[in-house]
Length: 427
Ligand SMILES: *Cc1c(COP(=O)(O)O)cnc(C)c1O
Image: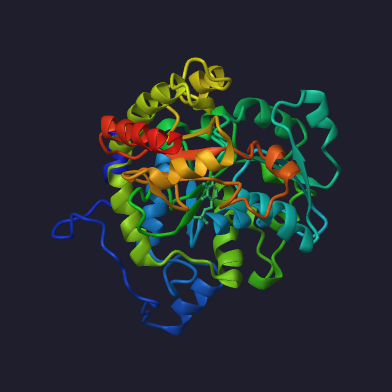
């Protein structure tokens, strides 16, 4: 059976039998029917698996989650309503009040707020660390109550590459898993599990959907972390759950423990499900993900080379440029290309930058990245405007940073658009 990446993008998760629909169907139903009340009772006790209510599980969502799990090389996955929900569930599934999280500081603004502002309100402490800190400095951030380490394969919007293997080794030496947000790379360009990450999260809103259709998220488990070995750190997985008659997830579900708990406990109680209709759209996006990622990367490299050599550009970060500070890590983790997103600064200050962005015609100003349409954003005045100047710098965002997400249009048209907008800004 062929199971290479491109084939998985198209076919994984849904194998129709005789007479069934070729396209993965939407099961647009809240509930599922049973013949006896005993059958239903067994489902509620987790003694049998089956669908009963879409807040817990839905066949469309499960099929799409299975495709993403196959693409990442994981054992199981769960869709969520958004990338934010995915990161929250991934963390909260193993870290409750009294726990501590270590995170790279170079991460998406929404996740920075989730970890730095909202989790502390739930009694979870967070330490942000510079990804370039030494092993000793990172080791010193661990505490007895540390439950996990978090980072992004390619940070949004700083476009730095996370040294997954180094952080996985450090996390494991302290008996905790590494969670990696793989949104920008997608499993087409990087599979963090191959470098030791234990859990992967996604905002499927970005390249996976790829067309700007639906907000969504996903959590994937590698099945590799040995929770029982550190049972005292992870009581939620390794000791009885009173809400299921004292069932213990690791004993009952083995390698499926983490995703099963996230589904039957967190999703049951918090309810951040992805609508089956959105999962259906997501699957259509996934079917062409491998084709689109290659085009995003080749377009972005052309645009980045143009920008690098333009006299009005103060600096540019794009990992695929052989002059980029991230290029060595890019070669290791993202040999086929990173993604379509880059960050740069223009000479001439804030006013020049705003005039430049307002003069773009093909490239839109949009609070979005990573879809087929090219777009720009100025994080300091848009997505990250809540952050102080120091927090901006800590998150790898200089105040003049312009984030450009290169779509899958013709690269020469995009370059011409940039050229004319720079000329306008010079006037
Ligand atoms: C967009 C994004 C998120 C949040 O995802 P939503 O789907 O918008 O909730 C999380 N992580 C990264 C890296 C992102 O780019």
